[in-house]
Amino acid sequence: PAWLLGLVARIVPRLDLVILLDAPAEILWSRKQEVPFDEVVRQRSAYLELARRLPSTVVINAAQPVSDVVYSVSCALIAHLSRRTATRLRLPVSPLPESRVESDVPSFRC
Image (cartoon, rainbow, N blue to C red; front, side, top):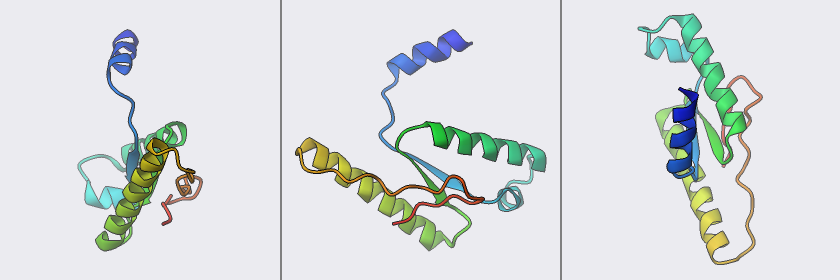
């Protein structure tokens, strides 16, 4: 129920950083075929919409080679931790590099 979700949202701490691993629906479906393709498309769309609304969300292109995905996630984590440390030390803070959520396959750029 919605009231329960609202209650949980008040109790659970806010997330500092959300990392969404994304790929084209065809690639996602090839990796997880027990879900119908239309459902993969719907879920991917819902996750990308959620990423647009949540602050501090980074979208990583998971269609890349694994080493590139790991590198992108590492860059996102280092950027986030650098910003958090700068804030705590009252130093100038640069924004997180933007994810391109508007494109077919959003990706974080280091």
